[in-house]
Image 1: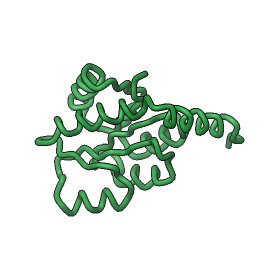
Image 2: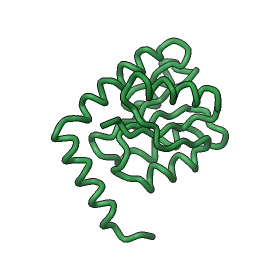
Image 3: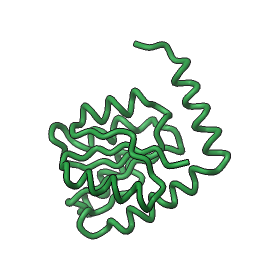
Image 4: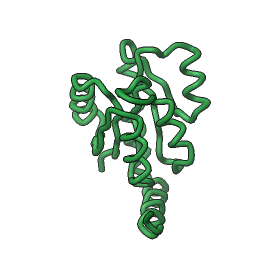
Length: 147
């Protein structure tokens, strides 16, 4: 089963190329895509417990990837959020991790590391413990009163 992934990226060319590559070599299925903080935060919240990986650019069309990170702080333990940015300075890495990023990758020099991370997460996602946790989160989400 592919790793259910959401992508927040405002550059259509980067998004298209990234989705194609992730799905081809990493056993990832990108099921959602947004170009603003509001779109990303809304999708991730509405699908609470149903996604396993979010890949977030820091600079979005409106808002910031840091805002998306903040909204993901109370996610399930199997849900990972990574930042993919052209500005992976030590300060940005530290700030993103403080806001809950599991990893930070530089778009220009660390794509291989991102792909390796995604492959590893896809393998971990296959464990019974992760599947049970995800099923429980989805059940809680489905049983929650809608607002």
